[in-house]
Amino acid sequence: MSKPSKQSLLDKITAACKRRGFIFPSSEIYGGINGFWDFGPAGAQLKRNVRDLWWDTLVGNGHTGPDNEKFDIVGLDAAIIMNNKVWEASGHTTSFSDPMVDCRKCKQRFRADMLPETKCTEGGEHDYTDVRDFNLMFKTHVGPVQDDDSTAYLRPETAQAIFVQFQNVLTVSRTKVPFGIAQMGKAFRNEINPRNYIFRSREFEQMELEFFVKPGTEDSWLHWWLNKRMEWYVALGIKPDNLSIEWHPQDKLAHYAKACADIMYAFPFGVQELEGIASRTDFDLKAHAEHSGKISPYFDTETNQKYYPYVVEPSAGLDRTILAILCDAYCEESLTNAKGQTETRTVFRFHPKVAPVTVAVFPLLRNRPELIEKAEQVFADLRPHFRVQWDDRGNIGKRYRYQDELGTPYCVTIDFDTIGAGETPDNANTVTVRDRDTMEQVRIPVPEVTSYLKQCMNI
Ligand code: GAP
Image (cartoon, rainbow, N blue to C red):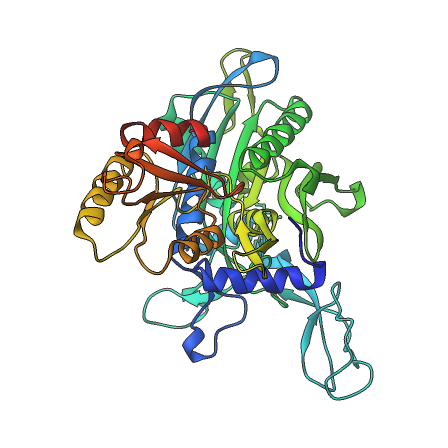
């Protein structure tokens, strides 16, 4: 097993993702649109699996934190477009910007802190203007009149709605500090230079938790959440060696943060941020309390104190998590086929928890009703337990290769032995189960296939 060279790895993953229906360029038939991507059948399922794992891991009652402290996390699904005052209070209207320069010669626009290494397309070096700030929020208008009063923004992060709804959620949840509010959903940033496939896009999904704690306890919660979030990525099947933690230096912290650590992943284009875990103090709640006049301090019944809770925020990107999973799982193997020729097998070695398909069912031949009938029975048995795909096209070797590239952990083949018409009568009512990673095949009695596969996949 080998990983291709780093330069070509992302191109190969991109090509495999297109071939197997994970990711397509948005509006491709019209030439695409920079910074936007569509997730095809396999990608949509992969995304859904990761999304569900995030939500199910976090949202619920009775979690246990540091010092065995019990806490709850509740969910929220807020609107993408909010009152403009939200963005004024949060500081996004004035300061959610990146430094930008233009090249006077080629007229291209670049992020000033990410200048290209390539020469100007008009020849020689780029001729840059002075640096200016570029606000990243996408503007739109609400209602039929397009003027300043109707201007609205697509949310650049999911977090703010959580702060804005803090009072309502606290009232209905019958919970107490420490507790969390989790939200996932689309966010939009008019990035100056979208790049590195789905790593930096203009439309993406965030999975954010705002965790409200008693002031003074935020440091231990920050470290606790950092560990928990690292464990989550490992549980998705990402190799721990590819993950690392990077603390922000004090002079590089965002204006609202007292401390921040990023969980980093070794992408083919370098070690980059997957998730940020910030200690946001009471900045946001106080800002919205001041601007709206509607958020009261929290009353702590244990200490009889009133305060605005401090916030620890694990903020993850779904698309970046998907890219990390794809990069981590992708591998190429050189195999010698039956004719003695060398061929390359491309495999996504996904953890069964996230694999879009967990079991593929193959009737050996599609034109033999007795095989199809038996395969349909096996398919129906497996369907309630796994994400099952039916495939009856082409020879079995090709079907295996297809499923390898889709990342399917197991394939089940129904052959003549299964229906008692093969050369080995002892194999009647058994199927072949083939393991994606070892490529080994074993015969398993039909009534035991479900339990066998559950055991193999540990699910
Ligand atoms: N509420 C805090 C916040 O939004 P952020 O570091 O700007 O913090 C959090 O974003 C996460 O969202 C990042 O770690 C990343 O995973 C994801 N993210 C941010 N910008 C992105 C982009 N342009 N494309 C894809 N994912 C992005």
